[in-house]
Amino acid sequence: MDSEVAHDFSPFFQVYKDGRVERFFGTEFVPPSLDPRTGVSSKDVIIAPETGVSARIYIPKIINNPIGKLPLLVYFHGGAFCLGSAFSPTYHSYLNSLVAEANVVAVSVEYRLAPEHLLPIAYHDSWASFEWVASHSKGEGSEAWLKDHADFSRVFFAGDSAGANIAHNMAMRAGAAELDGLKLLGVVLVHPYFLGEGEERVDKLWHFLCPSTTGCDDPRINPAAGPSLSGLGCTRVLVCVAEKDRLRERGVFYYETLGKSGWEGEMEIMETDGEDHVFHLFNPTCQKAVEMTKKMASFMNRDIIPSL
Image (cartoon, rainbow, N blue to C red):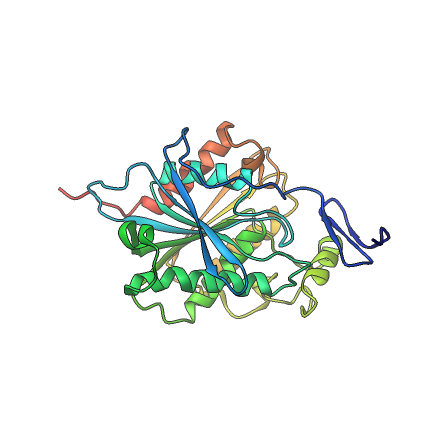
């Protein structure tokens, strides 16, 4: 075993000369459960056996109610494309809380991580996961929780950090696709991981994880550099930024660029004062994290009118 480091991207990971990857956090796993705190149930599904791409599906405690079937959230976890998991304690706890507050069905996608699986594999896995979800809207697919409880006319994408980047890219791809039987209503981007010119430290990581990139003019990491955002395939967007987050300016710039693009949807931006990047994951019970969860829940439910 060669202990010499070939690539050091602390505090995220190191790659040794023998090819081993050592991650410094984000590797814990918890099983699906019936969460006693929220009443939310979860289970894991294999989406693509040949690649191992999978997901954790959540349903809230109340699934039979006057509004009929529930909005469907497809969630992409963060972690700079190289850390984190839909099956980690952090994201499992967060999705339990979000699903309970919003009363939605959620599919939390487990895409493959770089550097073992270099980008754009995470994007391919995420789209394959969405296609699997979408197959249930046409009566195909074998997942009963989706067939029985999800309203495919009210679908949302959401993610934080790199997951927000993925959510944006999936929404752009959805805008150019035929979504027969499914309607993508909205996208929530929480502290999105986008780049611009002059961000050398982060740019170095991006180049390593995505060797095919052209750099900061790559629309996958800099949406303003690519096709017009007018092609975004949803009708409303919520961008969440945090005052102390080094990525704040990129999130605000995305919001402003979308507003100038000719996209005809509705836009909202929510800034949290005094907080840093993905603070809500590290301190999920603080008042500001609770407020952001409530905002996301409201965003996904505002068009729902209970049946009389």
